Length: 251
Image (cartoon, rainbow, N blue to C red):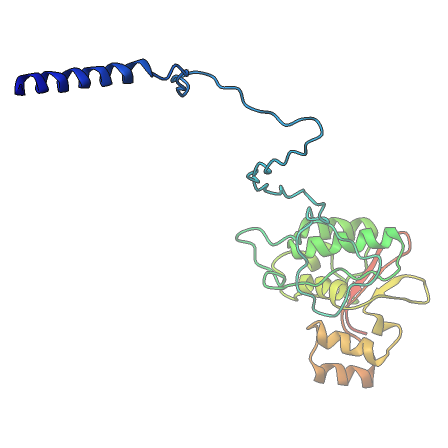
């Protein structure tokens, strides 16, 4: 009787399992895309606004390259310190001021000249003044002597040849007198229309007298004495055509 009941229970269980197996879901299974499978991406329609983030750009700084600017004449040397004020119009602006050759001693060896002063003198006068100045600064006796001989320059009231009076050694400081007159004093025209340095030899104004002191040619006491007696110091005269007329001192 017990065996019959157990057999009936097993049979019932088998029937139940069989019934469950027949109810299997036939719906297809959904699986994700296989690895490497390209999936379609939905793209917006023409009437849909798309917003894309701006792509950042890395700005590369640029280095400005300086352009050459003309500079004004830097082909001429810097001007030497002036000894008597600004240079007048017509002043040559040539190359550097020469210096005495090594071993040659004369009165301009330690002199620092200002710019050549020629006022509104004509070009022949300017050319001669520049030649005399450069020769004096270079202690070039050959140029000064030959120029004085060619032009018949008056160099002394007591006589003497250009070689004797302008040759080295420069015992009377004539080279310094030439350079200081042409750069430290302004010229003026005399009755013969020659251009004369210093102007005080022609005009005699207070400013002209003071130039002699500022140029280092004479002391204030010496200038005061000459104001009483008349100017008898060094002077240079150049004619309109550029002839070196005189370089003289005294009465």
